[in-house]
Structures are given as C-alpha cells and as structure tokens.
Amino acid sequence: MSNHTNTPLKNTNAFFVQSGLAFGVALCTLVGAILYLPVDPWIRAFLWMATMFLTTSSFTLAKCVRDAQESQSVASRIDQARVERILAEHDPFRAVG
Image (cartoon, rainbow, N blue to C red; front, side, top):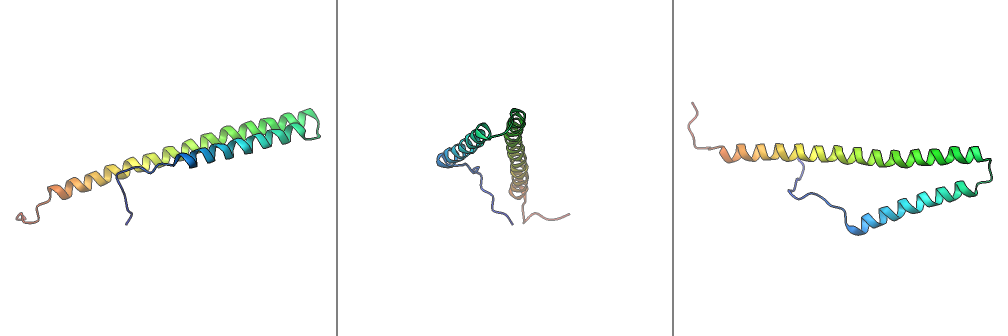
C-alpha cells in the first residue's frame, strides 16, 4: 500500500540551481573540448551536431518523464477521490436488500 499525500512533491531551490549549474558546466566543458580538439573542421562539426542533438533530446526526455509522472499523479488523485466518496457514502448500518 502506498502512502499518498495531497501536497505535490517539489524540488528545493538549491536542487534546481545545482541541476542547472551541473548542466551548464557539462555543456560548456563539452563545447570547449570540441573547440580545442585537434581534428578537422568536419569532425568538429559532426561532434557539435551530436552535442546539440543530445542536448535537445535530454530536454525532450525530461519533459516526457515529467508528463508521465504528472498523468499518474492525476489518475491516482482521481482514484483516491472516488474511494473517499464511496467510503463517505457508505452506511455500515443500512440493511442489505
């Protein structure tokens, strides 16, 4: 049995800043490495395109994961509300039949 609360879980501001900084540092490091890599320009261009594709794909994947989590959360809250309504309407002393 899972423990559901009515308040959604939120990230702290510190976690948000740390995540943004980590992403920025990683992207800048990769771009710097591509710029200073001793290779032909076409190889550098290929690596640049791969970096851009990976970056945009990461954002798309994060959005898909977030959307899936939100849809499960909404469905869970709807199911929980239905159960609460059924329990509120239930009268254990009512005669059956």
